[in-house]
Amino acid sequence: MKLSIKVIYAIESVLDIAFNAGENPVQNIDIAKRQGIPKRYLEHTLQSLVKSNILIGSRGPKGGYRLARERRKIKLSDIVASVDDKSKKVEMIKGSESDISNKIVNPLLDEIYSIWFDHLKKITIEDICYRAEKSGLVKQNNEKIDFVI
Image (cartoon, rainbow, N blue to C red):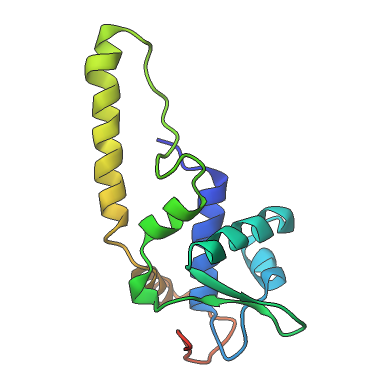
């Protein structure tokens, strides 16, 4: 299985926003600098996340992005599904068109994918932020704001 770079950027972006949340929205320029994501990819990815109700975007000089819901309510599977062009299906290298591939190998790969995606449904942004804090990752913003209504 292979995750697309778009999916990786989306996960990194949401984690960056969740981890560095403060009173003001997190700006895409700051995300791009911290994560080393090219701006041309980042903006498109962020817009997909807004359309999927994972992020809220605001315009203007103090504009940027916030989480649309609490960190504990955003699952990795939500992020993958929101930006994956293959409609929740991670690109997999499938075997040939032989009977063994069609009857055994490809169904097995589909089963592995399902197990993997089910596992992503159990991991929240809150879980990953906790890992980041535990690893000693330094926040850019020390305010304790996670979710704003």
